[in-house]
Image (cartoon, rainbow, N blue to C red; front, side, top):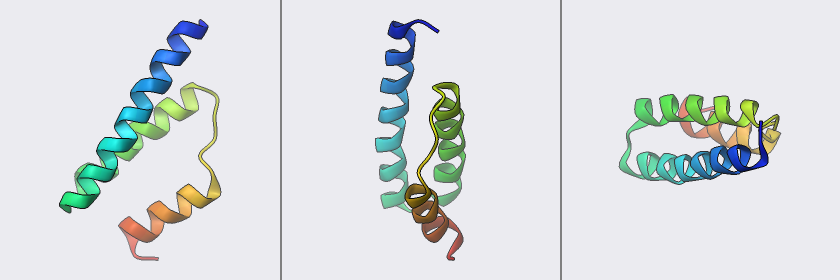
Length: 65
């Protein structure tokens, strides 16, 4: 993957993260869960790993753990 493409994918992923926060604020739980799946796919595509802290926050928010 070229650096330019990687940068573009990262920008899209970061915008989706802000939209995830908005869906969460609106109480759109199922849409937020689905959007998070897309974010995770892009994160993997970039060869990055979601931090354990972020995973725990999502589990607490969406699954009541």
